[in-house]
Every structure is written in C-alpha cells, then in structure tokens.
Length: 258
Length: 305
Ligand SMILES: Cc1cc2nc3c(=O)[nH]c(=O)nc-3n(C[C@H](O)[C@H](O)[C@H](O)COP(=O)(O)OP(=O)(O)OC[C@H]3O[C@@H](n4cnc5c(N)ncnc54)[C@H](O)[C@@H]3O)c2cc1C
Ligand SMILES: Nc1ncnc2c1ncn2[C@@H]1O[C@H](COP(=O)(O)O)[C@@H](O)[C@H]1O
Image (cartoon, rainbow over all chains, first blue to last red; front, top):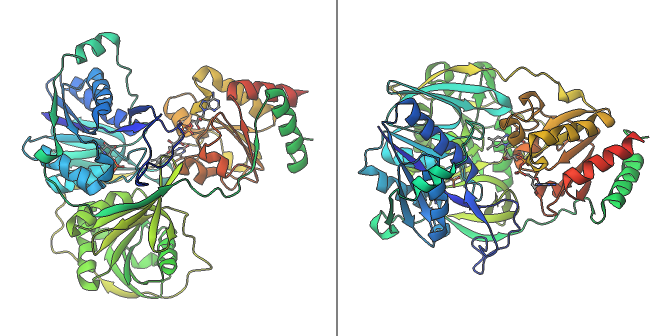
C-alpha cells in the first residue's frame, strides 16, 4: 500500500500578524512556524495504519512551501513517515487552493497512491478545499472531517463529524482521500531516536515548474486586520489590581456576585 | 446576476441554515433559485424555483450523487454563483462542484465588501477580500454571518430532479447520536471554561475551582476535550453545547469561530488571555490580559472572601 500525507507549515496562531508589503498575505518576519494542527492528525493516522498493517505501507509526506517547510517535513518523518517530497515554492502563498491542489494532484498522478490523508483545513488560509480538490482531480473517493477512521480489507469506515456533535458514518473503497479533523487520534511526539532516524530519510525536492502550472481561479484582493468593533474593556497591568477591578465590574454589571 | 442556493437537509428535516443562503443572496442583490436534496414533507418557505431531489433515493450524504444533481441544476439555470453554507455538508460538496465546473471557490465568507467577498485568515486575526477569477464561482458562507431579516415566506415552485444512475464511491451507513450529555450547560447561569491556554490537565482544577466559587459549571474548548483533560460533555461550541449564561469566563481560549458560535449569546463575557490580540477580545465585555494560572487563583481567592 502506498500512502501520501499532505502537510502544510503554518505560523503559530498566537503570533501578531501584519500584512506583507504587497498586501496579499501576512508578513513572515518574526513568525514562528509549525505543522498545521489538522495535518498532525493526518500524519498520525497514516502511521497508525502502517502499524496496523505490520509496517507494510510506505508513507510519503508532501509539502509545498519555502525552505523553512523542511522543519515540518522532518517532524512528519520523525513521527513515522518513510520519505518526503518537498515542493520548493517561495511564492506558494500567492497560489489559490485550486493551484496548490493541482500541484499535489499532478505529483500524485503517476505515483499510484492507494490512500491520501490531508488535514480538513489549514489554520492560516482555512479554505477546507485542497484535499477535496486533489481527490476530484485524481478521480478517487473522498470523505471530509474525519473523527474516526478504521481500515479493513480495502475499505475505510469513516466517521465524519457533523454539527452539534452528531456523526455520520460512511464507507469508501481504496483508492481514497480523507481529510482529518481535530481529535481524530492523539498525535505522537517524535522521540529522540526517531528524530535521529528521520535525519537519514530521503527528502526529494521538486520545483513548481516540474508540476502542472494551472492559472489561479481566485485571487486575494487585500489582507488587513479586522476592524475593531470597539470591543470591551481591556484590563492590563498588575494582577492584584486586575483582580480588584474585575471584581468591581462583575458586582456592578452582573447579578452573579453580590 | 443569479445564484443557485444549495439547501441542507438532515435526519429527515430541513436545516434552518438554508434560510441564511437566501439572506446572503438578498445582500448580494441577486436573483436566486434553490436546490435541495430533501423531501416534500419539509420544504423551505421560499419564493422561487426549487429543484427538489428525493433524499430517500439520493441519500442525505452522498457527495457523488449530490454533485451530479447540482450540476444538472447548473445546466438548467446557468447561475453566476453556487452558494453553500460552510458546514460539514457544504465544505464537503462545494469543492467537488467547483472542480467539475472549473470554477473558483471562496470559502467561509463572513461579509461583503464592495462586491468582493471577505473571509477570515489566521483565526480571525486577519481578514482577506477574495475575488473570483473564473466567470462562474462557488461560494460558501459562514454559518450565522448572514441572518435572515424576518420570517421566511413563500411557497416554492417545484422542479423535480432525477439521476439515471445511482452508483457512488461512498456508501452512507448511518448517523451516530452525539455523546450523552453528562452536564447540561444550557441552563447554567455561570460557566467558566478552560482552553488550551491553561497549559496542562493538572491545571484544570484551578479553573473548576473558580467555576464552583461562582456557583457555576466548568466548560471547555475543544482541544482541552480532545486531549482528554475534560470530558466531552463540557465542550462549548458548534460541535459541543450552545450556552447562554449570565456570565461566561473564557480562560486561555483564543476565540475561534466554532467556539464563539456556542457562547456568544452569554449576557456578560470575561476573557483571560495573555494575548491582547486574541480574537476573543472582539466579543468579550472585559479582556483581562494576564497569565491564566496567575490570575485565576488570585481571583478565586478574592471571590471566596
Ligand atoms: C468543524 C469544526 C468544529 C469545531 N468545533 C469546536 C467546538 O465545538 N468548540 C471549540 O471550542 N472548538 C471547536 N473547534 C476548534 C476551533 O477551531 C479551535 O481550534 C479551538 O476552539 C481552539 O481552542 P482554544 O482557544 O482553547 O485553543 P487555542 O486556539 O490554541 O488558544 C489558546 C489561547 O490561550 C492563550 N494562552 C496561552 N497560554 C496562556 C496563558 N498562560 N495564560 C493566558 N492565556 C494563555 C493563547 O493566547 C490563545 O489565545 C472546531 C473546529 C472545526 C474545524
Ligand atoms: N502548501 C501545502 N502543502 C501541502 N499540503 C497542503 C498545502 N496547503 C494545504 N495543504 C493540505 O490541504 C489541507 C487543507 O488546506 P486548505 O484548503 O488550505 O484549508 C491541509 O490541511 C493540508 O493537508
């Protein structure tokens, strides 16, 4: 079995964000990057399936992004991926989900993957499109938002999360693509020996020019901080003073403290 | 301009979010027609043409078949845009339709900005305006962002849709009910919720202590539940409980839309967060910029006195 896991490297969401010079994306200076949270579940599920099948499947990790992306790739390899493909693209953020997905599909087409895992969405762009588009371009079955995954004899039983905590269960046959939701499993922390082992694993490097170059179907016209709606009172400063002030406010404004 | 609105139907019922699609079309100032894979027994109130396909035949979740049904309606109506709710149904189906039409998709629109579509980026810390470059486009709208003004009205003009084949790559097995609710947060007057910012499981009792000092219940954000720090029955948000207490205290919670959807109706919201820019600040009445593990014990001690 050949498995592909698509991962994206995204900034830590606790950072401060400001628009870049061309106002089409965020400025990357001062940001710390990590693996997209949803994609950690995707990597973990792939590794668990490999373990279930006695180590037979080969897991390829793919990521499109600039040089720094290698760090996220290395983490995925340390979690249990076998090899990686890094599509080096400094201008990846200029590409819309259609273009990103087209690059992934154009790479995957010749490789004959049986199963592809992606995250349900990226934390920075959050389009929730790339996985589904890849599946459609490859003409394979697809289910999104998995909070449960099991595999038996060529069939996946996918538990999809619906609104209000209800789940929808569906079966799909390989080849297939699934998109992973938070809580699907418990992503492992790479151990030191596995981090060392990962250093020896192959990371193939490709350029966008080697893959299909589709034109964009949507474009970012502008990016900007949201207009502050006024918001509420911000209490900063020394803890003791904050405690007293909040106490006063709650006594005045709510009936819960008397 | 013409919009094709894709309604939603689940467990034998029309979903109310369907009406948000019409509200969005009204805001766009565009004509609309609707499509629903549903049943005659629960039709939307809608003044216009409704393409109806029978859910008993084509399933409530069967993206392959639903895609083909949408494409049929597109063929008949030639719409400029096809609009879905950004929901487990919409984000699953929309990109499939977009690929089939080679149309650009704009996901989770929160507002309109002079004809361009506004979406969030980076957990709502940034906003983007996105413009489609394809003639026709696919749009998904954030649930709750476009509320209908007034009661929906009208009787739809039905047009039936049928498919010749019903072969699909996906077999829908059935629904699983939400986990039993150990605590019913919907009636709590005070809820103090723990988010990932509390740091570790061992710190959760500190948050629970504030909840009990205020005579309330413990709530939680999703990562805290996923990590097993707090039981799922305490989760607040789109995939947890919807609450409307007199006081909601969010401890170390960033304020993602799926969390806000569950608690924004609280009368008074206090957020404790070390990040002054956390999106929760947008809806909080008071944002205390502090380390939650320093502030909360101090505040609890004060309450106890
Ligand atoms: C389909 C779908 C459904 C979802 N349903 C839900 C749902 O029902 N409920 C839900 O909650 N989420 C839900 N989510 C997840 C949601 O998108 C967010 O990932 C989640 O709400 C984030 O939880 P959080 O705020 O606790 O964590 P984070 O976003 O990681 O935020 C942690 C916050 O804590 C602050 N912090 C860190 N350390 C400290 C400290 N020492 N002191 C003070 N503050 C600190 C940080 O500044 C940050 O703002 C859903 C997501 C999807 C895609
Ligand atoms: N640059 C990228 N490189 C590799 N995979 C990606 C990239 N962007 C998105 N993906 C995958 O597609 C999923 C959905 O992303 P998005 O459509 O941006 O919300 C992510 O969780 C990843 O698995």
